[in-house]
Amino acid sequence: MVEDNRVNQLVMKSILKKYEGITFDFANDGLEALKVMEQQKFDLILMDLQMPEMDGYEATEEIRKGNSGLNSREIPIIAVTADTTEKARNKVIAVGMDDYISKPIDAEKLKNSILKALFLEKVTLHL
Image 1 (spheres, one colour):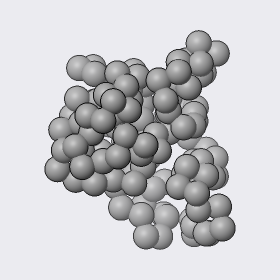
Image 2 (cartoon, rainbow, N blue to C red; image 1 turned 180 degrees about the horizontal axis):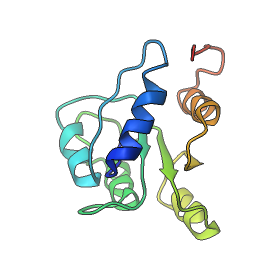
Image 3 (cartoon, helix red, strand yellow; image 1 turned 60 degrees about the vertical axis):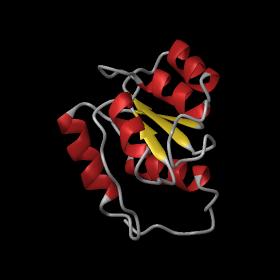
């Protein structure tokens, strides 16, 4: 999860820790995420859009260019944002993110988006 707001990190942590078999880390901005990705492999990224240093759009562009260390440029990236404008949705698609979820987070929508992104629709996560 790439998120600069501590309260949002706590909310996401409370949701994600309910899912069996899922581990997660937090990065405070896109630049920090890229640094972490150089040393650790991840299966999926939940990406805020508006952050200091490097926003979610820029980070996604770097990942899609192959600048994500141990991680594939095809890693699923789900935008998690309070920006519900059509412009944001279009830009999310344009930079190569796979899905879009608006804040406040609906746990069921998040679960479905994660399953869809990982092609695990047949697997049930227990909340």
